Amino acid sequence: MKKVFILSFILLALCVSNFAQGKNPLTQAEYVRMLYASELDESKKSELIDAIRKRGIGFVLTSGLRSLTSTKSRNDSELKRTLEEANRRRENPSVGQIPKPEEVKKLIDQTRQNTLAAVEEMPDFVVKQRIKRSAAFAGTNNFRSLDRLIVAVSYRASGQEEYKLLSKNGVLQNNPKAKGSYEEVDGTTSTGEFVTVLATIFKRESNTKFEVVDTDTLLNRPTVIFNFSVEKDKANQTITARRYISDSTITGMSGRIWIDREKFRVLRIESTATEIPASFPIRSASRVINYNWVKISEQIYLLPSLSDVRLTFRQGKNLFESRNLIQFKNYQKFGSEVIILDDDDEEIPEDTTTTKPDTEEDNQPS
Image (cartoon, rainbow, N blue to C red; front, side, top):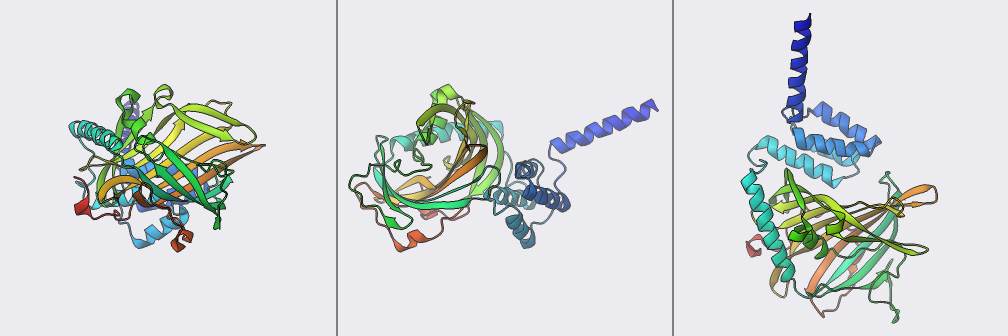
């Protein structure tokens, strides 16, 4: 009897080990069950995404399953991308192979070199931001639109960023006394997407920790996904709460980055503030930045195309989440006039990572 028990225990241990190593792909029934569970409990969605990444899928991804995923996940872009990448790995296992240690080191070292060089070579430019601001009870993902802003941003290579509110809900803002930013607008605002986040992650003094976790395809490019973390005293990231009084705090940062496997450039960042003091009114802060190739004065640069900024804060007995969805349009040389166009009233896309680059592939830097 004892031998049988020991044998059963060993078999169980082997099964657990195989599961942990991802040798048991998700079946369609498992996936659908977890998908329905994530619809009822938002926290289950991260478990589903993690399971797909670790185990892969053992079923054909049909149009029906894609439609079901979009419906039940409320068009969650991360889940859809993860599922598509798992399907590519199922069809061709060599496509999604995790890089070996020597390639991981090369990816980080070369991307650091290219990123910091790009920061130094950043031109002066202007760009239009289309911003949709919304809010929801925290954890529900049921956002209600608050307003729409159009903001002109002037960027100097020295790192200066100037923000000018052009319109709110389609009404032109022609106040000659308006400040050179849009901080006077009530609600959540965001700055620093162009250089600050990338520079913080890759400058050597940040002592950023990297861990390779997965592969993906963004902008039709093969990428490798890394977890990263920067401690508070190195990140020196500032979050400011403005309501009745203005209050700021310094935080660390952690998240994930998508690195082009061949061009050694960052195509996407997901960043979350860490080490937020317990007494601070903002309980969480996160930002997603998608990048794309754009042309300014006949030169090609990799710059933000879309950003999704979220803050969770307590108001009375309730916990709320604000969301700023920001599209960056019409990059031009510094001094150009930012003009409001008819298509600025169109809905802002939720995701730009599956679209083709704004410039032809052959024109992109190698």
